[in-house]
Each structure stands twice: as C-alpha cells, then as structure tokens.
Image 1: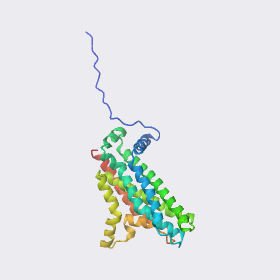
Image 2: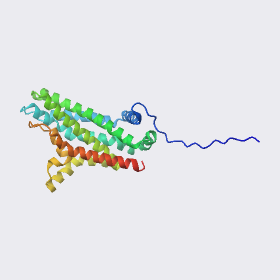
Image 3: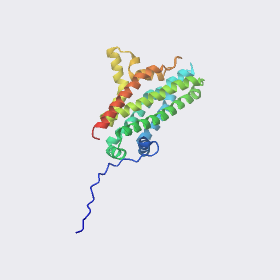
Image 4: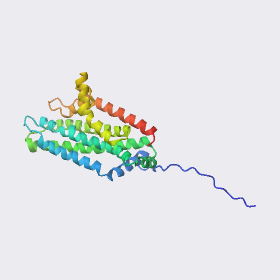
Amino acid sequence: MTARSAAAPVAVPPPVAAAGRGGAFGRALSYEWVALRSLRTPWLLCGAAVAAQVLVDLAVGRDGVSGVRQFAGGMVGVTLVGFALLAALGVTVLGGEYRHRTITRTVLTLGDRRGILLAKATLTGAVTASVAAVMVLVNALSVPLLGKASLPVARVVALGGAAVLYAVLGALVGLALAGLTRNSTLSIAVVILWPVLLENLVVVTTGVSQDLVPFGAAAAQVQAGDGTGPQWLLMLPLAALTTVLLTAAGVLFGRRDV
C-alpha cells in the first residue's frame, strides 16, 4: 500500500516589503517617495506656495528702512499663504490615502505601521523644508531687486531658518491631524483655522500671552525684523504640539483598523 504524502499547510505571512538599503525604514521611505511622485496635488501645492511668495514680495511695501525689516515683512508669505498650502501638503500625504482607500494596500505592502508613519513624516518634512527654503531664497532675492537694500547674511540665515522650521512643523501638524481624523477636509480646516482663529480667541478670551500659543509664538520669530533676531525658545510650544499630535496619531494608526 503506497502512502500518499500529504502536504502540511503552510502559513503564508502577509506581504511585507523586503528590506533594502536602510532596512525596513529605508524601504518604507522609498515606497512613500515613489507614491508621492505619482501624485499631482502635492506638487501643485508646492508650486503654488512658491508662486504665492513671489506675489507677496511684489505686494508687500518696501519702505527702504532696512533690508532685514523688508525681508521679515516678506516672510508673511511663509507664515500665511505658504503655511496653509504646505500644511495642506502634510494632510494630503496621509489623508489622501484614506480618501482614495489606498492605506490598506500600503499597510499590507510595508507591514510596519510605525515605519510607515515615520517615513511619511520624514518625507513630508524634507519636501516642506525644501519648498520653504526656496520661498526664503525668493524673498531674499526680492529685497535688493525691489527695495535696493542690503541684507546681512547672518540675519537672513537666522530668519530663514525660523521660517523653514515653522513651515515644517505646520506640515507635520497637518499630517498628524490627518492620522487622527482620517478626514482630509476636516484636517485642513482645523490646521488652517487653528492659528488664524482658535489661537486668537484663546488670547482674547483668556488673556494668555501670545508667546505661549504655539503658532502665534513661532510665527513671530519668522518676522522678527526688529534687530533682536529669532528667539528659538518660542518655537518650543509648536514643537511640543507637533510631537504630541504625531505621537497620538502613531498610537491610533498602530491600533485601529485601516
């Protein structure tokens, strides 16, 4: 009697991306970069932010008092229009996946949810920093072109660095809100209304110092053209808020169904 060998059932693991350079995180970062390059909306937002800076530089009065004051005045392009567009970019990076229902495929492909969120945050920060740096450069070049005033390099670097950091933190707040709400429209509304409306209401109704509200304190450093330069400690409230929101988004992303 011939014994028929029965194949034992083999558990098939979920499809996890093979680790390449940089390990699992490097693979997740590469995956997210390919996904981001295939979308048009994030790059339209980036281009619109740079274009908005050009328009702001043309619209803001150049009084000729000092190059630093002119440069700081032009930074409203980063703290206002640019902030809204780049925060929307942060929302799109994660919120777009929920909107188009591709988040499940991403999780099945990469496996490590914390790695996915970390890769998205890293990529969002890098792209936002690059766009904000271009906006700073555009503003710096516009001062001698439009105002015929000299700019001390050290002050431009300090104020420009504050502007880049502000934009990056704003975009990461948008990313975190998208992870918390899983709704792009709601996340964009919250991240835009927060500095424009909510913080001003808090200051007016409670009398709390403007230096303690996250976005207000950070934005003031970007436009500090009074000779003192940015006070980096006032960036801490926004940095703390970003950390808390990203941590909460990471916890929920790891626990709930996608």
